[in-house]
Amino acid sequence: MLNTFLKGEAGTRLRFMGMLLSAMLVLLSVFTLTQKGLNFGLDFTGGYLTEFTTSQSVELKELQSFIAKNHNGEFELTAQGNSHFQLREAPSASTTGNSLDWQSAVTQNDDINAQVLSSAYIGSQVGDELFDQGCLAMFAAMIAVMIYLAVRFEWRLAVGSVVALVHDLILVLGLFSLLQIEFNLTVLASLLAIIGYSLNDSIIVGDRVRELLRVQSNNILSPATIINNAIKSTLTRTLITSGTTLATVASVWILAGAPLQGFAIALFTGIVVGTFSSICIAATLPELLGLSAKNYEVKVDAHTQTLLDMP
Image (cartoon, rainbow, N blue to C red; front, side, top):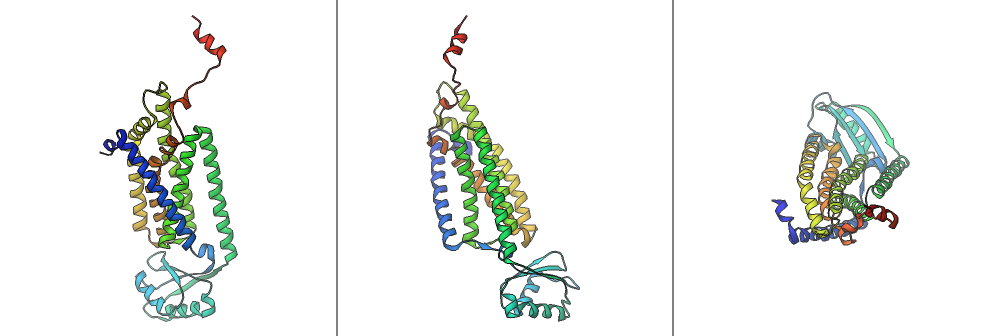
């Protein structure tokens, strides 16, 4: 059914409309990032991390409600098992006495009967270092991707893939900024995974476009038609790959709990926008930059041509 929509001028029109929509979403994401910023987690901002166990199985929501009655500040409670929990607090918790209040409450309550295993403070300097190292890793991955694309593709296809990659990252960050979802180390790791997935999707389409351009060296078909044919020939494979990956990520999102929720949301969004951008940006932008079959014509000098013409 989708292949039908990608035929002729209708397919070209859909691709250009998709690219216009992507540009609008990128502008909205950048605006949201500048206005609201990211909601950095304790991995980056610092704070207190406390692990404790309970004598019996306790529901996470019930325990969270009980702690909230004895804790005036912000905190994040995650379950590591049926009776093993982890609580993160902001650095200001120590000044208000919140840490001691809630710990006393859970250890003295007969129904919970908690036992504190460890309590540690994560300084903001450590968080800054983790953020710097994470950003450096993402920057190094982007540089490696650009070098790889420069070697593998003609510059127009390479630019399309890089723009699609940047588009995917900005949209994911914009979503986290808009919804103020906690941005922690696992989310940063998911951005690195998105870079790899988006690159793979763009390369599949780009390779097919390049193959068809080489075949059509006589310029019988227009670049728009060639690109539409390339997308149609890879669409089934793209949808199957994306669908199976989304099913896996959705399972992690639903079943893995709060610790991996941000990771799953980022990866799920990245796969969706990555599939979209591989069609509407990675394959469409090179057309705007003047991609044609002439870019893949084999050029020979006069001496070689003379040898080829000899009987």
